[in-house]
Length: 462
Ligand SMILES: [Cu+2]
Image 1 (cartoon, rainbow, N blue to C red):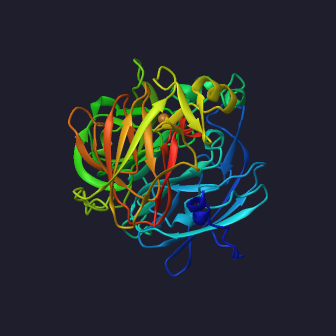
Image 2 (image 1 turned 90 degrees about the horizontal axis):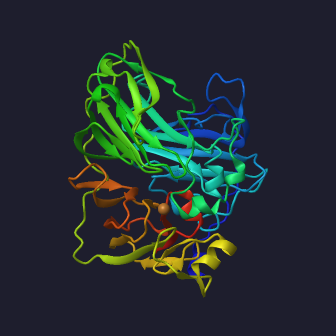
């Protein structure tokens, strides 16, 4: 507990009172935004019935935060909800005190309270921000938005040729409202997590996405769902060139299908955007029309030709690496019969019914109090993760990107630098990273119900 307390940072005091428009340059190299979380009625389509959501700046998704690599992001955050919350900046190799994990890196922002987030954006890429307190409810109610860091000057805004495609699936009842009765449902928590019944793209059901029809188009896919794994294809079998995963550039490759676990991002390039007609979600036997593309003509020169192919850093030598074994167990149809929770070994059924705890790392029900390792700054680390459960898990490391021989894009394993890796049942994977960012960093499943039910722990780096 002592190391935990050591790393617990207090709120940063001293909010500025300057009122600037979102995205303004507050001072040289500082990009300024205000975000307010609050209950908001939202229209997914032409249905006259609004759905009551919790949103940032009354929008779903929350506002697109745009900045250029090397700038500082400065966000004044206001909590107008009736429960505490925080914001996590997913994929940013952040300063630990700005990472937004309640009771680990900051105190929760209480109802009516505010917090000043300010940190450098050292990497270009597709990221996102989302609530990290009771995320299984707050993210499900809509508290997230995209964050794109460009590696060129954003004043040359590429409208129609650089497009975020943010997907979410919502569990709605017959009144088009969030099915609140099923929050905390043990069936969801012990199986694949909370799965929805309505797919939105950029906050709309089956929207028209305007694309510049002259030249190539960059699509930035992002899965904001609590637990749903999404599979996207383009109608006509149009091929997509994958250029980045989870923000970082990768060695490009062609595919006709993008698989996205919760929280993952994949950026693709479409060489000839005039061919784009429909975006399809193909997880079930009948493809779902998720969005249509609407061609617009644009005088802009479209996506930059000088796309970086260099990942944030290359796969490090692991000869002297520190190993962290993470044996993932639990859930329905699993082999975990008992686990240690708060120092006491108990039966899984008892833990499920009394504590809503169902998942474990190395026999321990996880949480912010579970230390997985203490690492010296600069060490190369290999997380040896073994998904010994009957379910896939989207394993996310805070504050770092890790290398993995990925099985996510077909038979051939690909070396990818990611911040979230989708592990199949039974899969063993080595997640390799350089521990060059000091702090208390969470490693957890991004199926948000799994995390809440015990699938998470902390790696301390100092
Ligand atoms: Cu999981």
